[in-house]
Length: 211
Image (cartoon, rainbow, N blue to C red; front, top):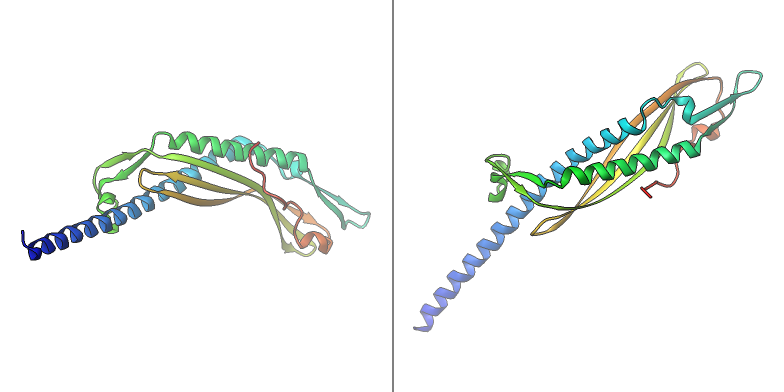
C-alpha cells in the first residue's frame, strides 16, 4: 500500500474519530441538561413533600415571641431555637430521603436528547437512564421585616432549602444545585420595633443538614 493511500486512510479515520467524539460530547451535554432539569423538578416535589410533613400547623407564635413594654412598643423579639433547629433538620432529612427515593428508578430521557441537538431533545420515546444520585440538603430559617402601616410591621418567616445533587451518569458526573424559599408564616407586629431587629439576623445563622 502506497504512502499516499495510507495517509488518506489515516485522515479519514481521524476525521471519523473527531466526528464521533464531538457527537458524543454534544449528546452528553444535552442529556445532562435534560437530566438536570428533571432533577430540579424532583427537588421541588421533594421539598414540597418535606415542608408539608414538617410545617403543618406551625404558627408564628410557635417560632417567634414578641414582648412589649407598657407603652405598647416592642422591647424584644426572640425565636425558639430548639423548634427552629428541629424543623430545619427534619425538613432537610425528609427532602434528602424523598429525593433519593424518587431518583432510584432513574430518569426518563427523550430519545431526541441522544442526538446532541437541543432543538429536538424533547422529542421521541423515553429512554430510562440509570443514575447514582448523591444528595446533600441544608436548611436555614430567615426572616424579613416590612412596614405595613403606622407603627405596624409585617414580619415574615421563610425556610430556605439548598440542595446539591451530584448525578453520576455512565459518561459524566454532574452537580445540580437547586434552592427553594418557602414562606412559613407571617404576622403584623404593632408598635415601634428597635432597629437591631429590623437589620435582620433574628432567625439567620448556620445552615442545618440532616444528622
